[in-house]
Length: 634
Image (cartoon, rainbow, N blue to C red; front, top):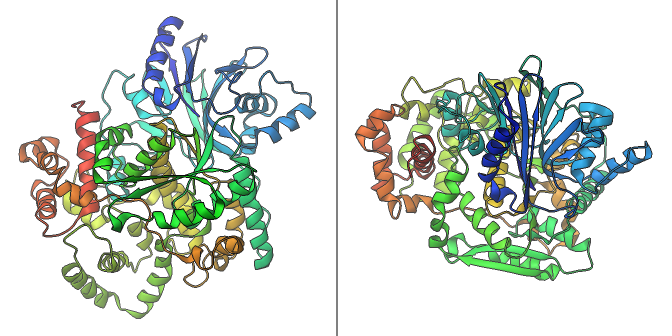
C-alpha cells in the first residue's frame, strides 16, 4: 500500500526543483507509506513531468521499489494499492513472451499496459490508484479502481496539472487558495461526505471509481473515460441452490486472493455476518491460527464483543480484543478529522481509527467485511423501497403531511439515542410521492428541505443529485438493484471507503475488503432480487450459503455497527469548541449559514431541547475543517 503524487509544469521548472516539490508532496503522506519513497522527474518538450510515491511494503519487499520503468525507459509507473489477480495476468503475459524484472504487481500493470494499452485496465481486480507516463505517445494515464477503494485527486490551473492520493498534497503545493465548491458543500451537508467527482474545493476533483484520465502533453488537455468490462454472463434462470453454491465459491476465492501478502495479516471481526464470514473463509484457507481483532466498549449499550467472541472461539483464532471507553475515542478526534482534508462526519471514523491503530501493533494487513451490505443487500434502508411503495399506495399525500407533522412534534429525541422513535420519524420524513425518497434516506445529515432552512440562498443547491441520476440512467430510484447502485456510486466511494482508507492508512495499516470484488458484484446484479432480500430477510443468499458453518440462528442476530456518542460529547467535552462555531460575528463573516437558524439548531441540541446529533455533528466537523484547513488556523 502506498500513496502517489504527480505534477506537470508548463513553466519547465528544473528537474531538481521538480524533485524537491514532489518530495514535499510525499512527506505530507508519509503515513501511507513509511517504508520507502521514490521520485521521477523528466523534461518533456514543452513541460516538466514528475511522479512520486510513498510505499508501505506488502508484496515483493525486496524488488518492488517504485517508480518502475519499461525496459526501454520510455514508460514509467507509480502505483498505490494491490492487484489481487496479478499472478494470473503475469502468467498470461509470460506465455506471450513478456519478460519481468521483479515479482511485484506494479510491474504487471506496466507490462500489461505496454502490450495492450488502456484496454488492459479492465483486467485488474484490486484496489488502486496509479499513473503511467508514456513518452512514446506523449500522454499520461491516471486510473482508479472499480469501487473507488483508493483515493485519487486531480486539478489543473494555467501552468500546472497535479494529482495525488490525498488532497493535502495538492493544497499545500498550489500557490493559491481555491474557493469552496457549492456542489461539494451541499453534498457534504446532505450526505456527511462528498462523493466523486466533487471535493470541497472548486476546481479540484476526485477521479471517479472505475475511470481513467488521459492527459495529452501536446494540447495540455485531459479527458475522462470509463474502464469498460466484459458484461457478466446472464444468470436470470439460475436456481437458488446453484446461485448459493456460486456465491460460496466466489467469496472463498475472493478471500483467498486478498490474503496474498509477505507481511502479517489478520481480520477485523465485529461478530456481524460479513466479518464473520470473511474470518471463517480465511481460517479455512490456512493450517495456522489466524489473528482476529475486535473493539469493545466499556459502556454496555455500545458493546457487542460477545458476538465476536463466539466466532473467535469457533475458529480458534488468536483473538485480540480491545476494550475502550469514550475518552479513548475522544483523544484523537482532531487528528482523525483533519486528516480527511475535507469535511467528513461519519462517527464510525473514530472507532475505526482506534481499531486500526491497535491492530497495526500486530499485523500490517487486515481483511474486513466492508461492502457486504452493498453487494448482497444488507442495509435496513433497503426496506424503505418496499415500505414507500406500500405506504404511498394506501395513505393519501395530504394525510401523510399531517402524519409527518405530528411525528416531528411527538417523536423527537432529546438525547443521543437512535431507537424506534428515531427510526420511525426518519422513515416518515423520508416518504416521498415523487420517487425521490431514497435520496432523502441516504441524506444522513439534512434533507433538501432542512438544508434550505439553515444555508444562505447563495450557497444552497436544490438540484443536487441530478448528475448522479444521469449516470444511473433513470430519474426514479425504485428497486433494490437501483438502491445498491446508488450506494456503490455515492455511499461506498465517498463514505465508507474514504473512512476506512483515511483512518487505517493514518496508522499505516492496509485494509482489504473481499466482498468488494467486481466478479461478486456483477454476479449478484444478475440474480433475482428475491435471492438477495427474501421478504424482510436481508443478505438472504449470503447467509444461506454459509449457514451450515455457524451456530444455529447466529447469522440472524442483529448488529448495531460502529458508532460514537458524539451527541453527548457535543454537549459536554466539545461544548466550548462548538459554541465558538456559532459566534454571530464569525458566522456573518463566513456568510454560509443563516445565523439565527443555525444558532437555534445548535443551541437546542446543547440545551437538550431536541437531539439533532447528525445535523450538529456534521456542522461541527465542517467548522473544524473550515478553521484548520481552509483558514489554516490550528
